[in-house]
Image 1 (cartoon, rainbow, N blue to C red):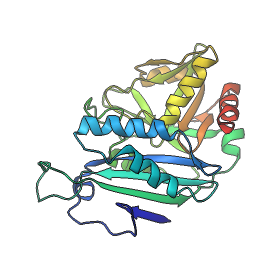
Image 2 (tube, one colour):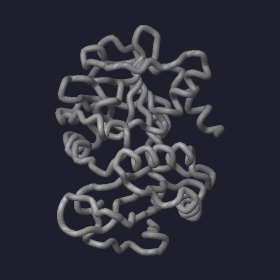
Image 3 (spheres, helix red, strand yellow):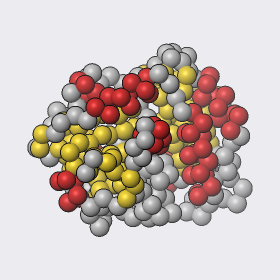
Image 4 (cartoon, rainbow, N blue to C red):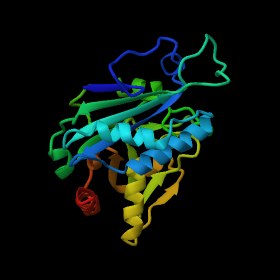
Length: 268
């Protein structure tokens, strides 16, 4: 692992940093393929949207881009970009003139079985619910305790991903992925106007599907509606798309469009 904090090599962080104290900040997880960060401009766009919502001043985009590119020293890596509001005195009130902290971390590429793409994964449901808050919906802020609690609900080997609902029983996403369900022959993805993260790969899958003449429907998705789904796909910035072979013990056929999307992604 390699770390840059405000452009300097090292892992030291000010204990008063508001990202550490309150989760007051944003992050992006970026896939590096063939030495290039994939969908980098989309990641920076989402970061800017999140910063606007939080009233968080961002370092110049040219600086962020340069530091990310400087960390792309191998063909395949994972880059995590974190921007916090920086240090402050004790208390929730944000400082009047914050000095943001920027952290860029380069991780080794994770290893998953190839079968997750070719044969699909097992999907279940989590008990932990996502709280509805339109002010934070869609953006990738640092507060992820709901996902932490949900991911603690199962051991590896039982299933590969768990779905999370909001407090009204609408399916929102997986713990680390966005959901697409094929219902009545159309791909449907949950609305994220109340909670959840609008993933970069979710955006890519929707754009690709529209180009194929099969635009994705975005709408509220009650948990009961999943019984009508003939196929599922899970997406995030690193995995691309995983098909689902089993949901809550029910076997599912793999939809060929998931493999087609991954083939398109590999050419980007």
